[in-house]
Length: 223
Length: 265
Image 1 (cartoon, chains in turn brown, blue):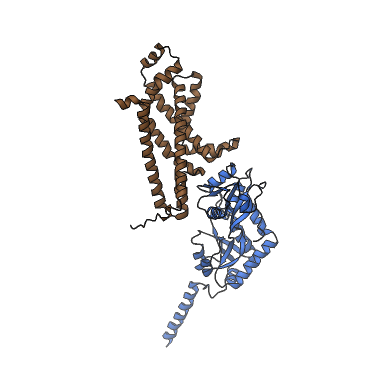
Image 2 (tube, chains in turn red, brown):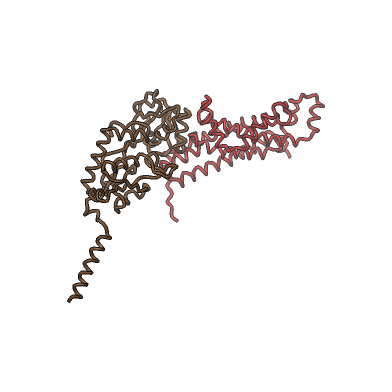
């Protein structure tokens, strides 16, 4: 086996790679923030929220957790225009990631809420807090603290899953790798570079989430 | 003495027999004569390249190339014998005299011209920009401010990337299906693709019909035949010319490609 590496194209395609990195980061940040907020809302509905909203939320969670991400993405991008909802590839990719992470994080956060001792709810009530206040001030933070590592992993998984958005011509890191491969035929180098980018970004994202955990839950840091 | 005569006769007979077994040598016998005397025209056709050649549900071959082969055999007054080939072995089939003609969406290039002769063009094969009738696009400049879908890495992607105005947005999809879906769902206004792909879209009778707007690269299909067969070449060219004039070739184009023959073919 003898292979001569050729990375001379990197400079020519630098802008494509940078743009790809920017798109992947953007998708991940928007998807993670909005997805987790959606997950918190859904988890609240499924545990403490109004009864009548629980079946539709359960249906949403089951629908998303039991279908492939790529199909969800294609449904939004290629399917919805048939009923007049035309989204650009970035809007479609963002929406798909939010909806996807929303469903997964709902179940993770719900586990955190359900593991909260009854006494904590009673403590909130004893302090004359309204149920929503109890949720926001007494329940949510310890619940998130419990499931933070699992939630962090899910966010990284969704970030890696964002690679399929290249299928709808969103120009992320995977698109950049495919684009370079189809023009230079340097498949080995192109995918090696994109692998390194994903790996470094995943490590950085995990570090960031760990750090955020320390900021949000100061008690963990103190212990 | 008698014995020697017998042996020499036997040897002579054997030589004649061997010559018969070897068959007509392509360089010596005239191909047109041997087609006429055998009463059949052997044609290499594609079997996995719709709409030029594919196998239907009834296992019968169908397509543009099959109709073309049938038409030529009809005009020659012989029966047609279809020989399914792949794009890799269609020229070797001709070189080894397994077929008389290659009608297999064959494009012309200098390497091929060294080993086979080409007839006049019989089918359009081009890459271009396609869009619904209402969209006014006549050249690459008109793509300014518009979105065009292409299949990533395809020839039309590479060509269009070079010549499209900066304000045109090129969306690159993974494969032809992605490009087709993007066009049909309105994610892109126009597509740059092959006329064969456009024909595949037309076949589905979509609400948005991709009509040819302008050419990117034109490489029509030719019939391939053995080197130095002037009689056969003249005959085939005559049949193609007649079919263009009397409209029978146009009928084949409309049937399989969904559009009339381009004027320059």
